Image 1 (tube, protein in one colour):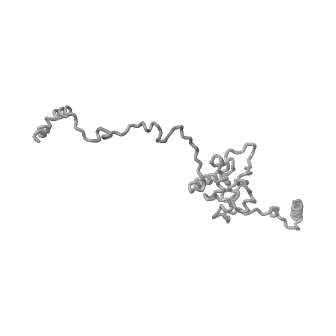
Image 2: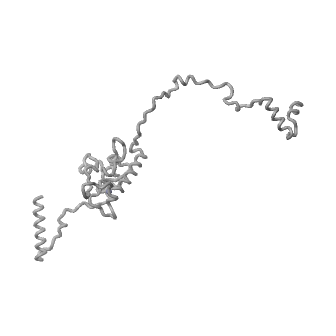
Image 3: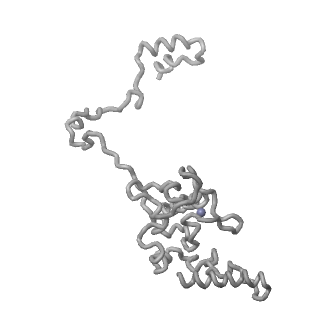
Amino acid sequence: MAASLGIMSRLWVAGIRGAIWGKVPVTPLRSLCTQSDPFDTASRYKDQPWEYLASEEYLERYGQAAVWVGYRRNHKGAIPPQKTRKTCIRGGKVCGNPCPICRDQKLGLHYRNVKLLQQFISPHTGTVYDPTRTGVCQKQQKILAKTIEQSKDHGFLSTPLSHVDLPCEDYSNTHGAVARTLPPPSGPWYSWYEWQEPPARELARVRKLYAPFQKVDVADKADTL
Ligand SMILES: [Zn+2]
C-alpha cells in the first residue's frame, strides 16, 4: 500500500512537473486508479440466477449472511430517511451506494431463486422485511414483493397460516345432545307435501261464495256421478 502510494505520488509529481515544464506528457490521475468492474446487466447467471447463490464467488462476497446485511445507505444528518430511494439506476447510470439488489447484477429476482427470496422474509412471522430495514430501493421492493407472491403461487415458498384455536365445543356426533334428537315423522315432513281433503265446512263456504259464477254445479255433478 505504502509502495503504491509512493509510486502514485511520484507519478503525480512527475505529471505536474511535466505539465509545468512541458517535457513529460501529463498522466491523468484517474488512469492510475484500478478500473472498476463494468456494470454489466447481462451476467452469466442471467438465465439461472439461483446458481449464483451456490457459487464460490457469492460465498466469498457475502458468506452465510443475507445480501442486505451490513448495507447502510448514505444520508445527510443523524436521522435516516424514512423511505428508501425510488430507484438506483436511472437511464443506465448507477447512483453512488446502490441498494443490495441493484449493486449486484448477478442477484436475479426470480420466483425460483428461493434462497435469495428467503433472505427478505422473516422466518418468525413470514412477512417481507420492510425496505427501510433491508435498504432495498422502492423499485426493487415492488419487484421483490411480486416475485415472492409468484413464488408462493408456484409452491416454492410456504404461505404462513395463523393458528386458530377451536372453541371448546364437542363436534363429535356421539355427544348426548345428538342422541336426544327426535326421530323423523312417519308421514310427510310438512302438511302441504301431500294432498289432503279440505274440511267440509270450508269447502261448502267456498262453493256457496262462487256459486253464481259456476256454469256447472260441482256438488250436483259429484252427486250424479
Ligand atoms: Zn436499488
